[in-house]
Length: 158
Image (cartoon, one colour):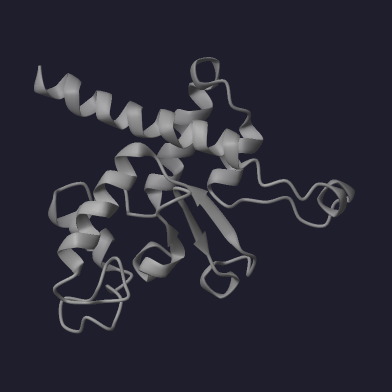
């Protein structure tokens, strides 16, 4: 999903990515709130992308009109020496674990954590009635996550 991210999925005014249904596993539109840090990275990347004019945030190294190969992030993790520790998809597990362990700090529910990962309940009465996206809560959680990751970088510099 990440390597298929297109610039037109990103609403820079509302700080949100909207993945069309055909691009996600559950075949339902998925919205992801963007953090201050992510917005800064995307704004910088968009300026750099201007020269190759690709519709993709992560274009192929060989063709600007094609997306980056889906295996490239995992290969990068392996080349960096973390292949025994995780694969790219495993970073989702890391997010879930750390977010669940820190609920007393960020004060968001396990349900909000699961929604950030686009994990939804299936075929329950609750899903028939509850169509909330909980974007505000997910935005709080994603900002906490970005700040948490920034703190790891800051702590390692000291």
